[in-house]
Image (cartoon, rainbow, N blue to C red; front, side, top):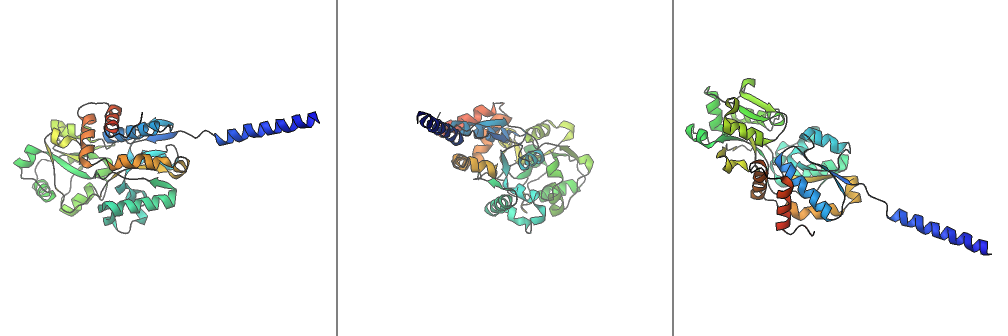
Amino acid sequence: MKNHKLFFATILSLSLIFGSCAKTTTKNPVVVATMLDSEGSVLGNMILQLLDDHDIKTVNRINFGTPDILRAALENAEVDLVVDYTGSGQYYYPADVMDPTVFNDPVKGYEWTEKIDREKKNIRWLTPSSANNTESIALKREFAEANNIVTMQDLAAYINAGNDFKLICSASFAENTLGLLGFETAYGFKLSNDQLIILSSGNTSEMLLALTQGTNNVNASLVYGTDGALEKMNLVVVEDPKHIPPVYLPTPVIRGKVLESYPEISTILKPVFEALTLETLQSLNAQVAYDGRNASDVAREFLTAHNFLSK
């Protein structure tokens, strides 16, 4: 009888032990990755700090790579959570785009991208920022004023008159029908290879430095809407009345399986990205790209000032 009691006691103990182990299964850390630019560094560090504040373990892959490399890594489950831009959806599913003008509307562009990525690849777009990081062309203020360049029509006339012109930009912008190719078609000009300096990354701080210094005779540069350099470097954006590039709202994007494991991530990030206005992102980016501050420090100061951190 004693042996039977001992047997059942042992079985009960083992079941409690293994049951407890099953309930405390360790979740995988969340691999957070971003593109190579200052904005990616700031937003990526915000995400890392927010998840850490909620005791979610992470792996830091800030400045992971170019947009194409980052997207491929997300699709291949090499990374889990990235910062991407709503207008990019058209490049991920070009065959599904029936009306490209959808991406000129911030709400419709987000909804289109969120729906197709969720349904086709179980990739989830969370709450975006309202800041439009669209692509534009920037000039030195004195150059623009001296040549009466305000709009893209003015710039096209300047180029077509045979004046010296050299643009520095990213490869993705130069090869994009809603980027440089779209500008050329819509406004009636064409740049030769000699008039272009093309960089593999989209880091505009390097481009704008070349513009302000006149490196290799550069007198125009790609610039993003959230870039903090415009005022600091006395630059102007050439107006685009035809609205060629799409709206690009910075958005946390996560693999669906990871969101299932950590559903709270959506709630954690939502109020933070809602607080990131255009002016706010311009200021944060400028502190990193042009004041030389550490992106992690800039991110923490913002989160602390807005009471987003509890620790």
